[in-house]
Image (tube, rainbow, N blue to C red; front, side, top):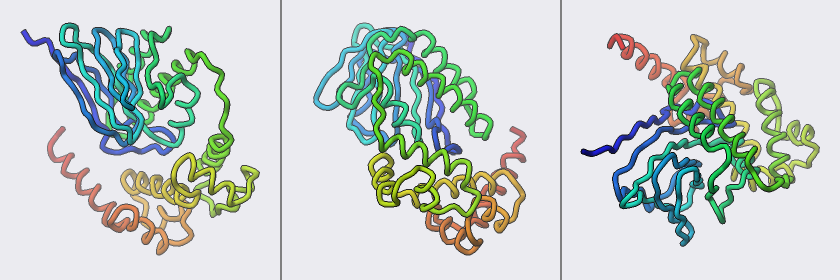
Length: 286
């Protein structure tokens, strides 16, 4: 009898910028089941509930047992394989966002060694991963609930860390800038305003963002505003002009140009598409 099972969920909309769940699930693998080699565009944590398997990354092989965790970094070629005799069962969560790298740097995960063996908080980590799965969904409240439980999960890895994290100045500056953007994006703030708040020159702020997020402060600010605008267009009856003002754009014309560059369609078309989808969903009776 085949005892393999898999339960998984993939988010179609990533509402939150600072930290968002991309996918979550758990699986009892068949013997020798393998994923990869391949790369991901987000972070992916696996926690081994039972059984055994191996992780292949950076020309190294790690043998994993119950209670172990491994982290896949974005853009890193990876493969992992279930044991032939005692295939593993694991829970996982995929995520990304501006908080992700900052939090993970304070854990015992590193690119050189993306494995944590027998964390003392393993049972609680397993429970939290299953809680993320339980509150899955594409509504905004689901996104908030999943992200809240993800923060709790990551906090357990911080709690179990052996080392005392040394804050990278670039990360500290970027985090402070993101906090400012998160609370002031709807106002006509500029990169100069952000730099003044953080206490850096514009050039130093630029280097910090490029180092940590591989984008400029202006690009991040625009992307953050577009993200908020998308939510308002999907979940409110506000006009495009009102959405532009609410998201901090200086004019509806500039908003429309920036939105079309980011999404490939105009804000009005985006709003109509999601309105049509909502009406279609409503007709199904689901």
